[in-house]
Image 1 (cartoon, rainbow, N blue to C red):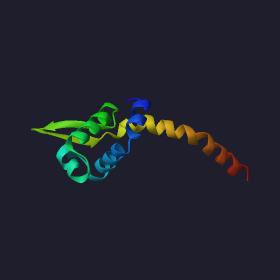
Image 2 (image 1 turned 30 degrees about the vertical axis):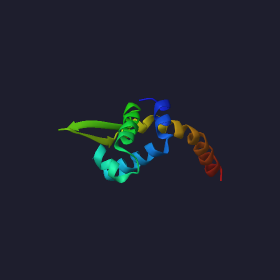
Image 3 (image 1 turned 180 degrees about the vertical axis):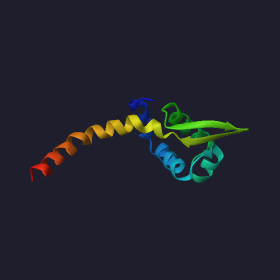
Image 4 (image 1 turned 45 degrees about the horizontal axis):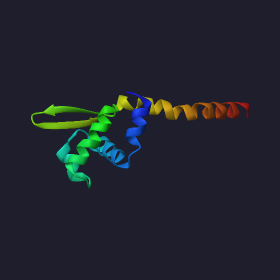
Length: 100
């Protein structure tokens, strides 16, 4: 899991849509996902592969189906990246509030 791969993966709007769907609905097969989005099963599979390689989703086989779920720990590098923009500002805010 690395920050660059995760950020690149979520930079594509369709992948964010798939992540939201998996977050909200839970584990789903490629076929179930395809029914809820306006793209082909092949395109969904390709997007899921990118998300899996970035560590943001995990896949498991159940018979002939591939089931996908959000891999929450895969978002830690993204969270750390975003937090880096807030830590200093939050520290400044805390100091300002304590000074008052």
